[in-house]
Image (cartoon, rainbow, N blue to C red; front, side, top):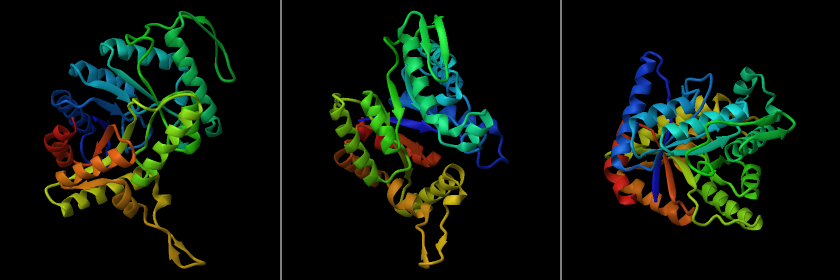
Length: 330
């Protein structure tokens, strides 16, 4: 099983120096390179302290310069926010500078605040995303690109540099919804699976992806399918549960949004399930390192997990993941 880390750049406590957030992340990347992780996957977000990394390609260049073997993943390049020719150039340049170590993950994005700030209609996001992906892949593989589409046009443009990896870096599409999984499967793309669904939903989506791939004439077997899971590990279960609860509250308030906090149905007088409790109970893998290992191995059976994409929720979690769990999975 391959193991990578989904690296956020959270700045929840603005009393601390933002530079320390980047310093801690870079320190973690150094450790990953030494200890045998497959890749760091960098999370792109805009206009939020949830993760202050507006350019995964620039951060990827920093990671590449400090490492020797670690692959550099984007999780994800938010394709609708780029001109596709610029996106093709940036990822190709990163692949060249890293010596051919890029894993390109592309996504549509979901935050309306980001689309509004960039002046892109949110209802165009799906079509722009798919068009951008097509242009990027063609820019990498065609000597000169001519393209006429609903949002972008070009005539005999030579996009340079070309990626070191030929015909192009390995590609994944972020796929959370069933429609996104269906589209990715119809094109034969590998997928990145999200950190917000329950373990049961993860297994169901993985089955659905395999079925849709087969229906489209492709095979999902033998592909690396990174499944993102939030991880909380401590020396005892109670401490790990506390870390998980803090991480869940952070995710709900910063990522999912306060509108998803529990409210009461006035007619039925039944409380809508607490999303923080849902994360702790059904989304976050937490416990002692032995318990976490058992949960991961269980997902290998139920969800065909072959690439664990970890989002450690504390320094302690990352240390125990590295020292205790990783050697058992590699």
